Length: 508
Image 1 (cartoon, helix red, strand yellow):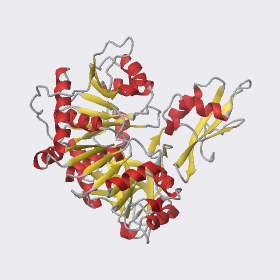
Image 2 (cartoon, one colour):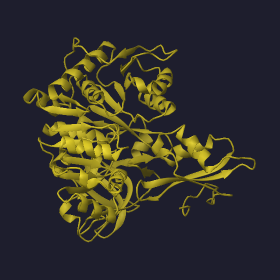
Image 3 (cartoon, helix red, strand yellow):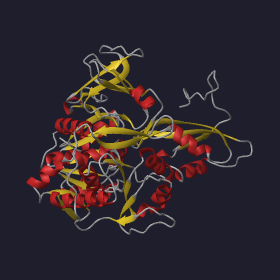
């Protein structure tokens, strides 16, 4: 079973069923299949083949969905990239993966133009919208295909072939490409959609970025069961999104704490008919006990699933809704077709009631980090069966006497803000590029809306004149918006370890 096979089955069995809703447009399974086939043919014309990497740099739109399906049918590997990514980071990922092509849109040309100019491996750029090549770009820039082309036969693949490379922030400040095989993604998709109970008659609301695996899997799981997805560009205007949810009779609402906080701040929720909503899901960051109670009171007809996961294996745990009253702060237990346990610093398995690092065993566990064997070896280590590898999450959990899991802290200092992973080093690098900065340390601090807010401690050079606002503006010009600090504090010095390294412990 390959990742795109479920979609192809429904495109054959129920071709007229709605696969995607985008604004006023309803796109059937058959139409998505036609658009995907055109992508396959166009990429083949530009020499893309089995195992080649193709980047998807798009907002939430039907072209993203047709794009990843077309890439998979060709036997290539898709790379979803956040559309808020800046040109230098995009160039890094294109070069790191040696991407053969880029699927994107005209509104992002100021970013992808400079990035592609620095990426010699890219042989073609396929653009939704006006396909005008930025000045000086010599790579072919072609329009998104809107007519049928001669299509090659589907590539021969097995489920061990790579399906995707999804970049995630690393503690070094450089993104790491998580390699996921068809088996990894099909396994995760089946396990998650099974315990959530996704159905063919579901209408799934997706304002989560498709470049974020939580958003991407809404489409993958919908296509597993033949359901529909309502694609939304973002959740910036919650009243508008509620109007859409009511009009489309949405049944499933996947969200992150930021989105739920925005909803709970509205005073007009009772004006929207959301009676069809039967399920809400939350991951990326934990909901507070108070938020859980308020959400359940606002949407009494909807079950709420609290979950935990990481890009390296997609999902790890879920809390059955019938356990919310007993243990609201737990993230549950391992999902189907997976085994999890805690270990101490020496790697010894711990009993219930202990605190340690979470280890994951299952077919959902990644193949490793793209061309980063040393970092892969830190996370993938020998498991209980000779020859197998298991994933060390890098996150600390505790269990209660019954084995239910509770998140404690991250072993490294990765920050999760707005449902996205943020590397403090990457933010520190951006701030260091501001003239007049002597030293900087970035940490995450608790925030009711964001999960964690980013706080920067900055030591200025004596003559520096910039303000807190200047630091934030500087970061916004160089980083995705979710990576910019919410707080900046100027300090005379930063604490150091005995070896002279900045010591972040206690800064919060």
